[in-house]
Image (tube, rainbow, N blue to C red):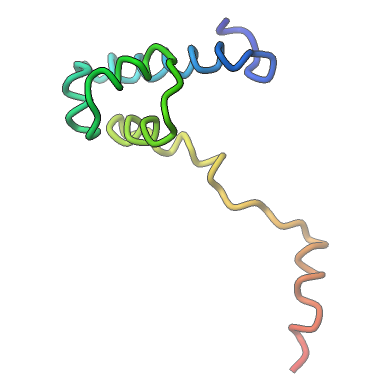
Length: 98
């Protein structure tokens, strides 16, 4: 599954991969699920379910990434959309006149 590009994966496979990554982040920091749960304001079962890929909420993922110091992993998704040069020119029409 690791060599499969995410666009070719099923939803279930993506959630399983997400769970595995969350677990790896926790293990790399030598934290127990209970410790993470307390730091994230979650219960231990929620942490375990997220690590199993059991359809975690976005809020759960954000809280876990925050605990692991990995919120920057969301940067690409949350970055403001880039405006094309032509769209910028169009948006400026009428604004440059005094």
